[in-house]
Length: 171
Image 1 (cartoon, helix red, strand yellow):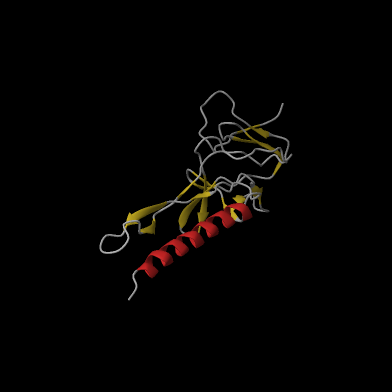
Image 2 (image 1 turned 90 degrees about the vertical axis):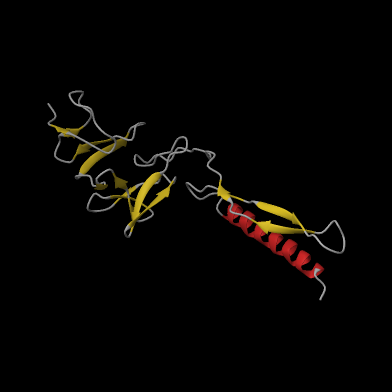
C-alpha cells in the first residue's frame, strides 16, 4: 500500500481545519465580545524509505486571541467593555461560563444577564431592585436610582466590593 496517501490526507485534513477556523472567525467578526480562535499545528517528518521531504501535519490544541477588539458607544447604560484579560462570569445550569460580551440586559425580576444567562456575582446572581437609572463604574460597582426616589451609591462610609450596592434616602 502506498503510504504517501497518508501524507496527502494529513495535509488536506489540516487545510480543512484551517478553513473552518478562519470561516468561524470571519462569520463572528461583528459578534459582541467574540474572540478569534488561534490555529496551531506541528509538522513531523516521516522516517523510513522514500523521500526525505515527507512531512505529516499534526493538529495541536489551539487557543483564543484575547486581544481587545474595537469598542463602540452603544448609548445603553448597562453595556460595558471589559478591559485587559478580564472575563464576565455567567451561570449556565450548574456551571460557570465566561464571556467578554458586555451587552448586559435586565429582566422583569431585576436579574442581570448576557444572552439569557444570569450574571454571576460573588454570592450568586446579581439582582437589582426596581430602578429609574443605572450606571456601572470602571471598577464594576453598580449604582442605581431606585423607582421610589432614594438612591444607591458608594457613600464613602464603608468600602464596597464589586457588585455591591447600598441604599440612602435622597434629601
